[in-house]
Length: 255
Ligand SMILES: NC(=O)c1ccc[n+]([C@@H]2O[C@H](COP(=O)([O-])OP(=O)(O)OC[C@H]3O[C@@H](n4cnc5c(N)ncnc54)[C@H](O)[C@@H]3O)[C@@H](O)[C@H]2O)c1
Image (tube, rainbow, N blue to C red; front, side):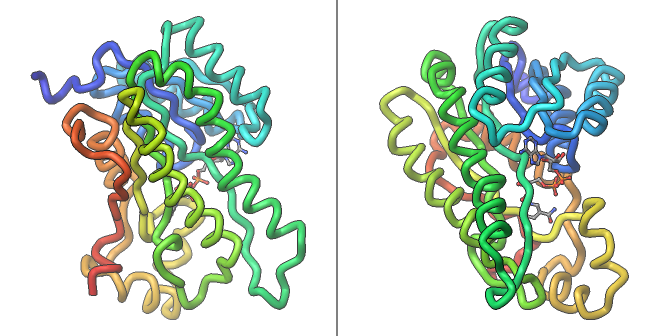
């Protein structure tokens, strides 16, 4: 087996392809030979990912703007994947948006939007892609979070923990339902990953103490380090791995 081309001939949907982890994963899977189907609600970031993948010699189709909290948009992404590449082998459910408030300040809208944009989005996209994943005996990789496993002192993450906890447990159920079809379903749980939104943590002593001090590595993770874990779970190297969660958290939860 050519380990550098684990995804040759495979088509991988990457949701949230314009974001940090989505882009890094699109680039990683494309470098390993995948046809990428990107999609994002924000057109600008998604278009930049297309440019970067193509510049690196990869094959990519991108559907943007596409709000994946809408059933029709999820079906559109799968339809375009079929038209261009003829199937779907991997679904990487990465795209999400969370809203934060402590419980005494949490209004209904903040709660509902987070559940919708972090949890419903995974269900809607997976349901849309399921018939194709059945045909291909494909793989699903969902993005859960450290927040699915533990509270983070400074983060008012009630809705986020509920949504990502849902993603984590839904992944086990998808693995169980998928087993009859040869579908594997796993998740990754990133810790604190250096993205545009988390840059401030490095510069704030209190955040730094809580977020970085808890990591054995004593640093933030890079999007590429999540992408490597996703590529493993999506590949045949993980052929006996399903219903699992791979923590990419620098050891936070291990001590
Ligand atoms: N950065 C971290 O420290 C961290 C930690 C744990 C988990 N995560 C998870 O990793 C995933 C990617 O996060 P990131 O850090 O790369 O953030 P990001 O904001 O850079 O990327 C998320 C992308 O998803 C897109 N998106 C959001 N809602 C969408 C919708 N309704 N339809 C289509 N696209 C939508 C956004 O436009 C964005 O491009 C998320 O699921 C996030 O919860 C991130």
